[in-house]
Image (cartoon, rainbow, N blue to C red; front, side, top):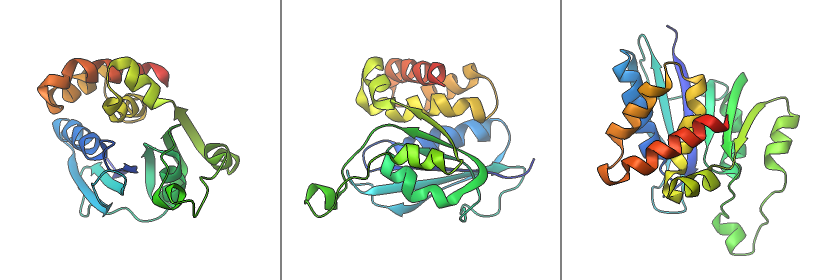
Length: 191
């Protein structure tokens, strides 16, 4: 199998690193060579966080260049726009509709752009948008937004839903299993 490239983008505190760990565990279980790397950002709440997940028969580097991502999973709209150049022409952008003001917006030095996902779609990009925060809150915790988005992404990543759910449940903290299982189901159904 050729190498597949996934970029997960968000801001600190949204669970991008846990999402990449769940994804990595799933691909390892299926026998793929996997490389996962946090390449930019600070994990403190509010800072941009980006992780690369690469899997296939043999992966030599954890890095993904511009125009190489098969899928970008964006936990926030502005991060979707920021990392769009990394998406392949036929790639898929899965994005939460959530907006989190970056520091320049908070300080009044900039405005949050309008119509981000619509503008991306107008460029011919396949965009799957979901109100992941709303679904996460429905599952029982806003912190499960990451697992909602994994539920959506599972449709494009191969193997069955039950395998994904089992890996989610074995990777998340024990006290959050029930919430995350529900979050995955809601995300999976939202696609």
